[in-house]
Image 1 (tube, rainbow, N blue to C red):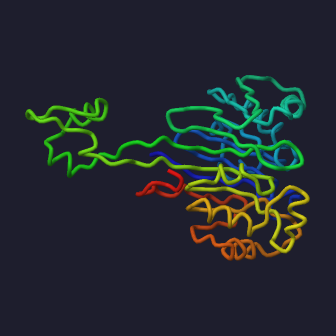
Image 2: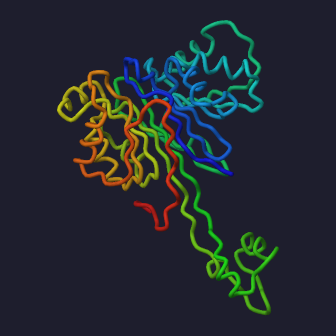
Length: 312
């Protein structure tokens, strides 16, 4: 059975706390696993969350501040120690390649796994697979930063009642899917007559950034949006100065972009009450599902839309 869920490994911003580890997020997408921003302590958080090195197929780093990347050394060495049987691809800002190399070879170990380095230098498509399209968009932070977006291609959902009405059964169903039309009892049956669009799911990961065009491009029509909300609204000036978002700004982005499930994360240690982040996101107009992330939380990707996503 396919699984699509976000496993939250850490939710702190610059400074970890007793209850919040540095960042770390694993997206399970059917048989693939994408690890985003492994901060310090990610390897141990993986153990606590039941995430194995074998679950990782891609690593996506938004930028090279420590809370988003210091865990790379341990994760990469664990991938090699466990002899992960498939290649792993790493995406990261091209301007930080020297940091990636330093972390990858921070200490001596035996390399047993192929890790392909694919730096990101501009907006655009990073990978096309049968299950998703992976894209990057530039964000606004004091160091070069990119957000990531996963888009599943649209497909078709076969409708049993209509198939029966048109006399299509057994192997003919597959033939009709492949050819888009089929002659049954002397009549041509088209795919549109017996199926409907199955809208692909969309996921986006937005970390350290001010409001910018890239934020909205990533969030547009997402079923699940993971977005930083480092500061509360009363500290908006501080957020802008340091290249971050507030909870209200994150909520407003999600509302304007038609997001279905919003996950707030990357919280400053200065705040004690996580519920206030949700209150401010709601006050900004977001009405969908909302999760204030905690370490080791699991968030399922929402079920498929029945209508076209916004922006389609």
